[in-house]
Image (tube, rainbow, N blue to C red; front, side, top):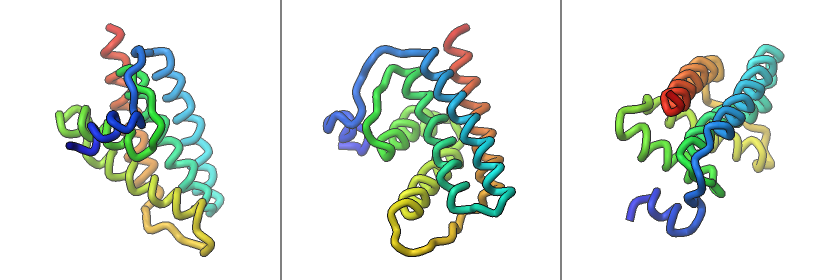
Length: 146
């Protein structure tokens, strides 16, 4: 059993109806978080920037699930869905998934740790990769409506 099929089996991902409207709204949320992330990076607030950047990647990935009619209840399962349905098929760059996973872990550590942590992730590179991810996902969503 693959991780993705396990996500569906455990109902952490479920089939609903596709929604281009919700996909676009999720991308709008991603844009808002990206602006916040850049502002936080510029202020030297890398811990909060990590959280905002993860939210940018999360909403961008989630837009694909809305596009495809999938409801999520697990951040891990969102990544597995994107991996299986988009990265392995060559529709999206594997770097997008790598940053999604790395930032998810960094966000978790930042929020849950009792230690003051510094991120090992190059946040400027993450912003650049995220912009590429958002553009690619927007193209996939818009190609669906044509």
